[in-house]
Image 1 (cartoon, rainbow, N blue to C red):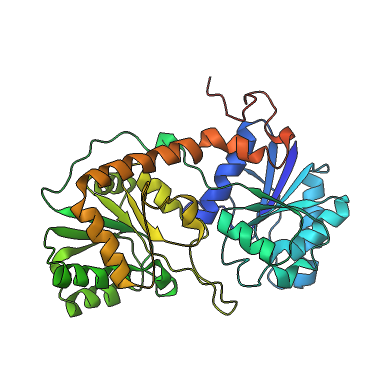
Image 2: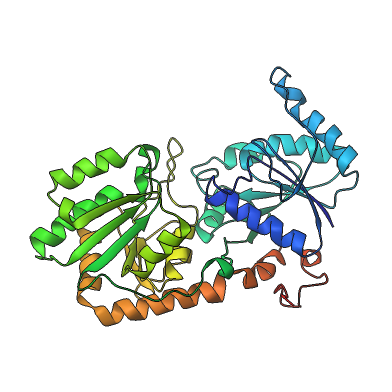
Length: 379
């Protein structure tokens, strides 16, 4: 099949959405499909990019036409159109009209929560299917009145990037870890509420044998560092900033629990939260039990009291209770951690991606190199 993808970016260093779509497009290419892309921000050398450069002073209303003209020279026949973002769908509508085709639209989280999809859907007459990153996002789309096909395609992990590492714990201390940007725009991730929970653990439960490791950089770091001092918990907290993949593997292997109580809001003025929360899947690969919110995309990963604990993300008291429960129950930490990894291996790896994509079209996976279950053969 000839496939055209139109999106904002395929920069692997940008974030989870970019890596999510790169994984899917690489999989399709490895299945034998011809994948051509156009991204508004930069190019990706792994894929064939249409030879088009935006001119700054050209009226935006001609944007789709100019892309179409360039695309038709590069790929006159297109079997499948993929739109990488709801906010680009108005341009994709014009592009597919030239081909007399429909397209599939990727949706993630805050891009379509809080009425954002409903406000645009009436103008999307050529939309065929929606590719949803999580069950929570799927529910949000349905609640906004969409009656068409929604195909669940979650982020998956390439197991080659997760070599087996030996667990090396930090003596008798229970280590909690959070991995995520420290951005003033993403305070919903809950770093500050974990810090307040640690204060409660120390004052209420008299816990002393803990350490909280914060991985990530951003403009909110100084505020969080000051908060640790104000709460008098700075001796229990360590900020690492940015770390390499190797360093991150070592930190995960030395940790006991992954925690990120991301708040979810579908307020149309300021929606926020994890569309899926791929960092939970990555932590689970190191057999870490998970503590996360009781709603949002991460509930696809966290099964309460099976591979981790769900919490009220706005309640430091509830977060502290869940942390203390795992501190006091070593056997459960181990059990939950093993179940967390098992769930990832059973549901969220490249081995399952073909099965999910089969929901879009059997033609996407029924090619040489893929077996009847959708699993990509490595031999």
